[in-house]
Image 1 (tube, one colour):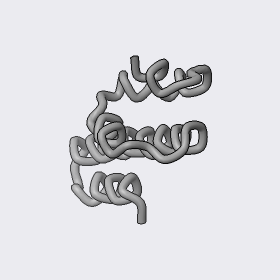
Image 2 (cartoon, helix red, strand yellow; image 1 turned 90 degrees about the horizontal axis):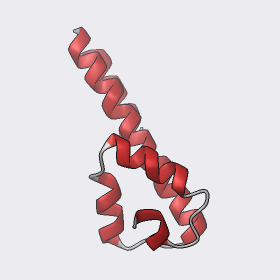
Image 3 (cartoon, one colour; image 1 turned 120 degrees about the vertical axis):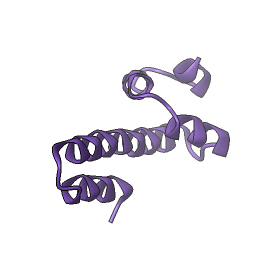
Image 4 (spheres, one colour; image 1 turned 90 degrees about the vertical axis):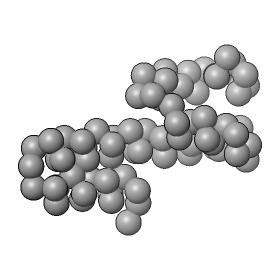
Length: 81
């Protein structure tokens, strides 16, 4: 089970609307992190641990921006700069 699946399951088990919403939001964010990391690795190869930490700690807005930029950036500096 992926982290995103675990977060979604936790949201469902909570038994109240707030827990379900939090679980869905966290699950979406984790899914976006996983997608971005996959895209980055396919395009740029192995990634430094510091970059992975940056991506994992990013806001939802940052993740959305980077997920779009990865399509046109030629370097990691262009993507994250």
